Structures are given as C-alpha cells and as structure tokens.
Amino acid sequence: MGLNLDYTDGQTLIDEEEKAGLRIKTISTKGELNEFEQQNIEEALQWVYGRKLKAAEVFSEKFIGNLHKRMFDNVWIWAGAYRKSEKNLGIRYHRIPLEVRKLCDDAIVWLEDESYPPDEQAMRFKHRIVSIHCFSNGNGRHSRLMADIIATKVFGRDEFTWGAGKLSEKSDARQIYLAAVKAADKGDFQPLLEFARS
Image (cartoon, rainbow, N blue to C red):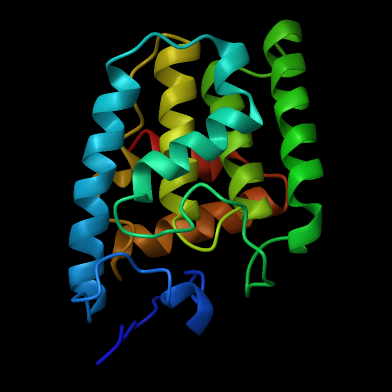
C-alpha cells in the first residue's frame, strides 16, 4: 500500500527514497506516522530531561544529530543523519555541516557575550537550525525542542508553550507560528518570542 502523506503549509516533503526508510512498514497514513513519531519523541524527552547538559554539549553538531536520532530513530532509518537531497525548504544539502558548525560557534559567542536575552538566544538558534533544515523530516519539532533545551538546560528557564497547540497539524496556532517564523526570516524575532511564550 505505501505511505500516503498529506502535507500542511510549511512542511518538508519526503521523497520516495526517504519514505523507503520507514521502519514500521504497516504505517500508511499521516495520522499513524504522527502517532508513532510522537511516541518516539516522548522517549527522547525522557532522555533529555533525565540528564544534565552543559551549553558546550547542547551547542554541538553531535548533540543536534543525536537529539534528532533519539526523536525519530524508532520510525526512520535516516533519523539523526543530515539530509542528502534538496527540499522545498532549507539550504543546499551539501552546506549543512558547515552551517551547523557556524551556528554552534555563534551560539557559544552569544552565550559568552550575553548578546541576546535568554529567550531570544533560544529563538535565534531555533530559527537558524530550522532554516538550515538539516534533516529529511522533523525539522520544526527538532528546532522547537532545541529551543526548549536551551531555555531549560542552558538558562534554567521554563520550556516554551508554543501557543499551546499542535503545530504539526493545520490550525490557527500553526498559521500564527508560520507568520512569526516568516517575520524572523526578515529579522523581526518579536512575534516568534511572543508566540513561543503564549
């Protein structure tokens, strides 16, 4: 039968080769896929919040890939590996390692120089990592969890609420979120900061 995906605005398209990387061959709908991915994400949350993390660990290529792997490894064989194809979103795939390295270096400088308030640093990191679009799928969820980790583990603050809605489904909250991301694309992080704490 195969996996039949209906995409909502702003989601990454998964090509046929990437679909072949599905570990659970009985999944055939987006709803089933979301359910299995969410179970896997819950396991990743237990891993993250069950340990101490230092900023240098969080702001590393290794951690970024490992987090994605822990979020999606039970569902996708390519979880945690940088994408190897062009997408409807993100930079050219061959530039991903360099851009992630630059982002991690920048984040350490932001932290050391106190360049931005804590929430803004988390949002700037989240925005850059999702703009890079490192992975074949799960970039939005991964970037939001990275922001939560930065808020809680690096700055000792509360997690973000992200509009208290399911952002992977069509909703008013998703439309507000996407508009806030587009504002951040133009350098205005205020809508994203406000949405993340709403």
